[in-house]
Image: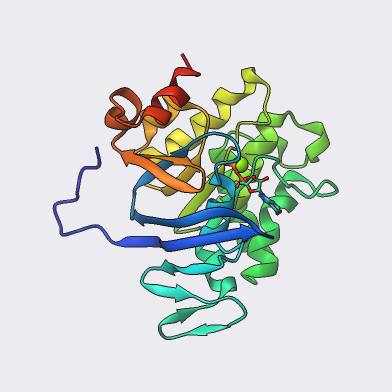
Length: 258
Ligand code: ADP
Ligand code: MG
């Protein structure tokens, strides 16, 4: 359970309201509401094809919803708009909300350090020296200081994914979206990546993570959301959702992991 800070209520960082999305004639999301408060870790679980990736991509507008709204700290995100006042443009949203993907998406021709400073230098226009200092801090945090000059093809999958996490962190995001970041890894490499996510959770990073690592979700999340057929079929505390579910489809989904 989330422990509320004594000094007042937590703030809503990111909010999805009634998000719908179709691909062609095929509806994928049927109206999803999700609100993420500061310091909260929300795990999204559900069968393959249930719309988890589409939804988490909608949260930072990598997919533009057909209807519904995304709000970042109360400001409505509007695609194709620079943003001002009550509205927020895509560029600003993505400066605040980082994302890590299943397949790393590192720049193959760049070193670890160059991958991690790319965003701070080109997007945030930070001076290179400052960007390097920040980048090295996060590269060290994910345990890869000695690999700063290595290229992605010289790294294991687990190391690549830790670089991808460092790259997202170097933008100093307000929240992180993680989409099955261990699903492409050999089983023996999963633990090192989950360890990094766990330490971020302990440091209070606000996160949404789509994961098939059910026991990890139970461990680090404040709330678990079960998606099915483009809807949230059940949500609540990890104890409730994972250990005492009401929903029959969720029960059979969880049974696959035992
Ligand atoms: P999950 O992440 O839960 O496995 P996805 O969000 O990836 O689910 O996919 C949900 C459904 O949307 C699937 O049927 C998938 O084939 C479809 N889909 C996802 N992305 C696209 C796309 N770009 N074009 C067409 N169909 C898509
Ligand atoms: Mg997916």
